[in-house]
Length: 453
Length: 131
Image 1 (cartoon, rainbow over the protein chains, first blue to last red):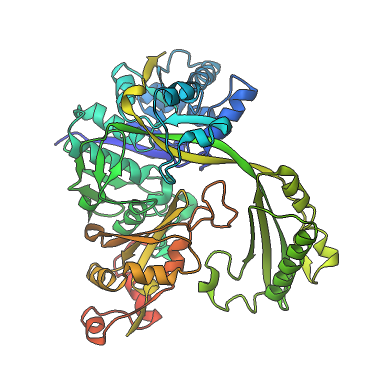
Image 2 (image 1 turned 120 degrees about the vertical axis):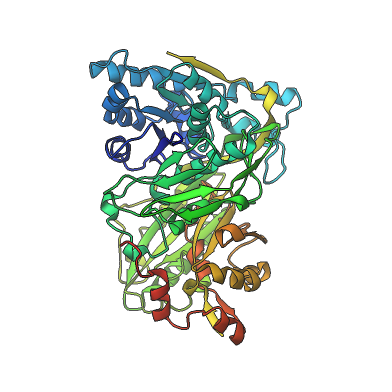
């Protein structure tokens, strides 16, 4: 029988279920625990935290997650791979080592730290060398927003993680690596896949895509037959059982809630998909039109047939820059005529903004309960609603205008249309917008470093 | 015959910048052909006209009995810029499932498309499925 390597998904984003990592290592056999913490905007939040305190800048939840699985790592050989390092993987590693020491487990962890993704200190050097870092969506060169950039990180692939594992790490902490590499790397390490075994690497990437959003492949947020998905309160997070040939089974621990089926896995496969023929990663270009799924018993789906093509010579760079201010507030209008009252409130508020001479880049009014998510497609469904939430937001480069707007909402409770409530929060907060600038850079300019400590 | 997409497909949606994607999956393998033939890029663009600002792309995944639609300019700038409740396009999936397709009667009968909600309930929870 060929050897199986089990990679368990334990976090789908920073803020995911705190119980999940421990449940994954205690619910049955797993070899690796994969924890994904970084969404596109997360790096800029972490960068701000690091500027305030040089010991910060990583996903602090990870320390608690490590504490919850410490016994499994120290005594049962479970290895952990996480992109929790954010913009400060070294400080993250130090915090985890300190946690282990305070639990009497000094020396139990060999932490591999992957760095080199942070391009913020190098931006001017790169621009001067002719790397324009053009926005992949708009084509504009980065120079347009250069003075407002607050974070810039290249998405790293599997190679430095594989290197850390080969050097004996039982915990690998990265900064901005691709979510999928966190799953593919341990499979590549265990099975010794070469850097040009495109089909196998693509299979590892697709395994990663399936488990990178936590329970979204094991019954969570699943529309198909949603009423009958068992016991979501006890939902099992997904596990990959990988084989050396690149085929794998998606499953979850026995006795847990949720469901792993062809429909639940298919819904996750199409999530955030662009061109399915070319899912581009630093390691390989995976072809989602080659994926074959097969029901392999209760809560087991076999995945096979995956093809990959050679990687490109670029890395994607995630750049964050300051882009003005916004504020969103809301009020709730009750039956009768809830929607009509909310619509009158919208007209009154806009007229007052006009009289103040306030023009914004964008003003958006929505009617939650009538049309906020489906717009005109919702038809007249909101006409007799028991209540409708009026939600209004503005966006502008000028903070003062946005501040002034926030003072115009609550007065409507006494000086606007009737039957209104739900204003307990008072004035909404003004938020500084940190926008996302996706770009490409030549692979040759990014040097990754791996240190096991 | 008119058939509502919700009765023959399920879906999930997400975002990439200011673009929402909707992956739409046939509830039965044999209904994929119906989707492929009738759920065209133009019809989806018409369905979302006035709701999205950009164009629509369609990709076929016959291996998953799925179509993937990219709805450009759907998210008021997307991500942190967006003022929308659904800033990340999470429920564009069900907005598409509201759509109705006109399927010729003979084709609908041959594919055994459901004609009412009861039929649909039977399709999505086939006998023997663990619950």
